[in-house]
Each structure stands twice: as structure tokens, then as C-alpha cells.
Length: 408
Image (cartoon, rainbow, N blue to C red; front, top):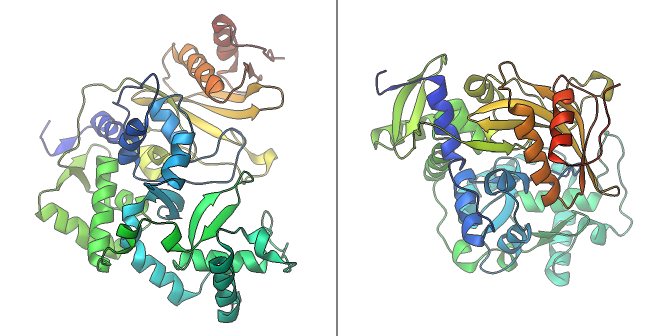
């Protein structure tokens, strides 16, 4: 095969290697392990759903194995602060050094006043900013003071203070200091959150910032189309195309063709092309490997949609469904729930992918046992839903992992 042509399997292995699935799991992951893993993923998407585990913890687990989640808290809250939340992919933890590269995005938000921010008056914004400056780290609830709440939209209940704080966060007048135990955002002034040397950095031009974001996306992807690169940090394609051209001219990106793909692709010059990938991991619905749905389908032959916001009766696979990566293929998907009160990891549905190998159920059962242990759950229970459920029941029984709901 020509050097500028990759098979689907090669592209898949390049992508997994770039995301850190060649790295061996450490018995006890350290801050160094954490930093290495974050270098691979680039960002960690934040989401409020906690039916299993918060979204930002899961990609680290998928790559490092069981780890102390306090590593993430320390990186995001203690000096030297390594991470800060911002709208990088969507709401996400990102390395603090990216803060200057997203200044153009903050300026856009200030100029557009889109979303519900047009409801936030300059007086309200100024009052909230002054209050946080005086009080120190604050949540919206602490600043509400009886502010009216709207219940017009399903799933949302945003106070006037919350809207104002969100606006101030998006334009960079406030930053996220931490999350409290209720997962509420705690806001503070950027100079009390970010390292002084980061805030002192000159602001790159929009073109310079885009170039750096595309470069980082290319490193995290290994091989990617322009659409993949655009999506990683949610950029505009008109900005991304010149950045790609510059990186191609500099030799950082190598144009390639991937069998079965219609769009041109680009291989990062430092990307690894391993002969095999021996991964075994459950992937969060918010894992970078499956962010871009077309990419996921092209690389893995895996059609994936998040059904959290789909009415229960219309769901195909379940509420919180995780792809199961074995080797370099996604071989199954499972709908998981952590029943913390009962101490049980519940498999609400288990489904094999076409052509999944015979050992899929056994390997999945082993991984579920590791996940349950990491989450502090004593047992695994498999419910009778999905074509893989009977084999998974047997595998869980054989592994001695706990109670079972047998197929009816």
C-alpha cells in the first residue's frame, strides 16, 4: 500500500495510539501518568450526568485504569494549576496554557450577546462581577438572593444570577475556580484562578490561535479530516482550512487518503502506526474517541448516538450507553448505571456489535469488574436486555462478580 494511503484498520490504530491506548496502565497512576494522559486527550469534556461517573473522570479511567480522582481535583484546583474549565470543545477542562488562545472566542461571545445573554443587562453583569470580587469564590445559588427562575425549558432552571454569571464566564470576566460537592460551578476572578504567567502571556492573533488549536487537535487525533480537526476545539471551518494548509506546508501534517473515506485526511508527522493495539476499555459517551460521529462510523464501523435526551420508550440501546473497545475494535455497547445505595454496577442492556469475537463477553465482564471496583461498588448485576446479555450473565457468574438478573 502506498505510504500516503491508509487502510481503515491502520487509521483506527493511529487514532487509538494518539489517544493513549498504547500506554500501559500503571498499578498506581501518578500525577505524571495523569499529565501524560491529558497530553493525549487534550481536553476533558464536562457533563452533569452522574448515572455512572462524571464525564470528565471517565476518559482518564479508560486509559489509565483505576486511579485516584483526586488527581484531577488537584490539577484543577491546587497550585501549580494545570487545568481550567472553559468552552474548549464544549464545557471542558483544558490545559491552562490554552487560555490566551481562546481570547478571540471570548471576544466573540462578548460581541454577539447570543444565547440568553441578551437578557443580562450591563448593570446586572457589573453588579455580579463586583459581588464576586468582594465575596470571593461564589456559586449562582449563593448570589441568587431570590432572583426569579424560569421553568420554560425542560431540564433547565436558570436564575437571573446564573445567566449573568454564565455570561461573565464565557467572556472571561470570571473563571471557574472549582465545582462544589453538588457539582455547582464556583466562580471567581481570573487573576485568582489562573497562574499569573498565563494571564501575562500576549494574546495570539486569531490565525495564530487557530493554528495552535488545529495542531493540538491533529496530535490528539493522529489522523483526521478537516471536519475532525474543526470539531475537536469547535472551530469554524473557514479558520481551520488556512491552518491546515500552513501545517501541511511546514511538514507537520501529511496529506493521506484513507480507504473508504471520501474526504481528504491528514496524518500528523509524529503519529504512531502500531501493528496492533491491545486495548480493553469502556468509553464514556463523551470520550474524544467517539465525539465526532461520522469519524467514529468511518473508523470503527460503529453507529453511535447518545440517547440521554431521547424519551425512554424510543431509546434503542438505553440511557447511558458506553462503547466497549477491545483490541482496536468496538465490539459491544452496554447501558450502565451505578446503584450506589445498593453497591451494585447495573448492566441495564448489553449488545454485541456485528463480528464481535467470542471472547467479548468474558473480556467485558472482566472490565466491568474493574470498573465496579474503581467506583466502590461490590457487585455487578446484568439485566436481561440485549443480545449479549445471556453470555455476559455467564461470564459475570464465572468471574464471581455478583448478583444477577437472569433472562426471563
